[in-house]
Image (tube, rainbow, N blue to C red; front, side):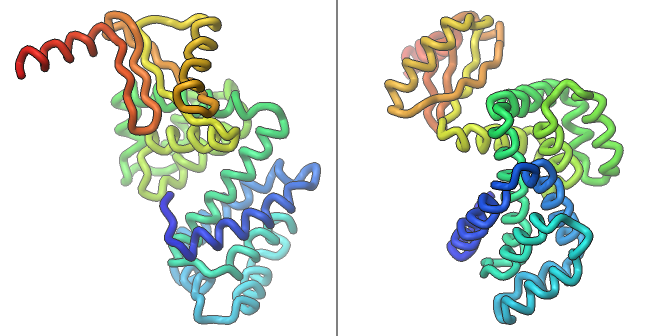
Amino acid sequence: MTFQAASREALAAVELTLLDVVEGATAAATLGEELFAVVGLLDREIGLRRTLADSATDPANRERLVRDLLGGKISESALTVVAAAVAARWSSPRELVDGLESLATTALLVRAERDGRLDTVEDELFRLGRIIADQTELEQVLANRTAAAEGKLALVRELIGTKVDKTTSALVENLVGQPRGRQVVAGLEALAAQAAKRRERSVAHVISAGPLSAEQQDSLSASLQRIYARPIALHIEVDPDLGGGLVVKVGDEVIDGSTTGRLDALRRKFAG
């Protein structure tokens, strides 16, 4: 998500409220799902969204309105976060909704972090993205804007079943059920990157001609950490068509040590 200056400031301020709220032992367990539900409401109700994001009105009135509307329907923890969000100044009504969705995601990642499952969630999001990308028909169905959300959710639930962490499931179901213009594969990659960022690590997308042993992964991670001077999380995909070696992408940089990559480089050299 890209936010304008006012929205970035608003999000940073409300995140402090969120993190204060989730200090409660049980708050993080349902907070993310409740905030996603509010996102869905504001996404459907254009008039309400505009009213709650209207910076020309008194912030106290906007907060009072949301408390009257949602009081008793969501937890006090979630209501506190939403009230803080609508009292802030956002660049647009759409960015208020984007901000609440970002806060919901953060709440869920905090839950996974506290459970010691953040690594697992990050890996599951990345792997699910690769699985869907490799199944063209499934990706097309999920990208179909005219298809019913419940049908898409049924497909995804059948795919993941009970095999993934509850945080992964909640994040994926929100993405599929409320895509808000996003493609599923790109959305999953963004969520995995957000999980990695929470652990203050960059993500290296690694394509290997064959499986890497634990020792090879540790060696590669250490080498990349020396190169980039920060911890690096590896997301590994196996592609036998590489012929051999690795292709590593960190941000916009690509390190191509594959057989195919070297052959392509030679072809360009002789062609030039």
